[in-house]
Image (tube, rainbow, N blue to C red; front, side, top):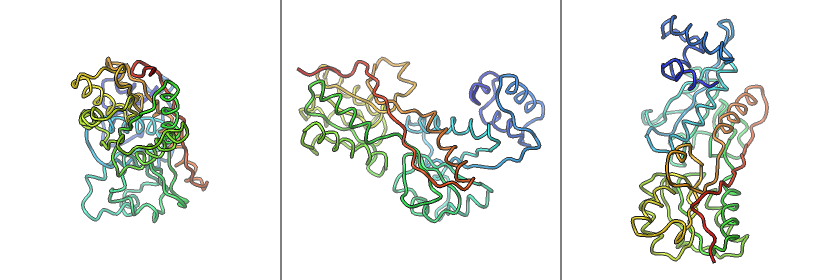
Length: 327
């Protein structure tokens, strides 16, 4: 039973459920009691009114409706569920809504946050250079800071996942493999580019910069990349997100390219929305639920005085219909 499932069953918002479970004062007692009684009946851990609640901030880099943010929402939802079950309150906020000169440390202390989970951050973020000075435990998603005792990180094994994809394609006879990157300023993009270079070396293929296109994790950038790859002789393209892979497939089809007969395509994420589309996309599956769970566990450990850690989760290659053997 999750907060989302409770909200759907009772036809109330997720934030209302969260507030009710945390005994917030800004919702009606009748609504609060209904939510708490239903949650308890369904086996969900309901916090006692006498138990103290600590506050964690789930801080997004920016607000938009793209699929990248939907991924972050999935992780935050899993994070929130386990945090509430352990008597924490989770408050969501956005870096992009903050004024110029925003100081992360001051914000966390003024709002009585004991820790923060930061997602969607790039190297250009206004708080990126502030991280090492933190005295509040932080967990970063898809980012990492070396030699920082109060900064843990959680991500997928991005480099190894791309190596796995290249080995799979090479085993099927592909020698000319392209890469559709995410944002240049993204740590996760850098790791996946490293995996691309390493993977090629492992199968004896020379790196060719002309086979790399820089997108931005949006479907539009995938569609734009179709024109780029159409001018190359690649037989396969690995995309750093499913949403870009979908855009690439649409763009290539508009150029009368057959998928996978002319160009094979591999995505990255295994988004739930794939179940409701006809793309039948071969992809690298991330465990978003476990990412949120591990993020909370890292916060709990640091609050108890344990050392920060870097947690990397395995990605599974899901074979579907957008990759074909190359004769």
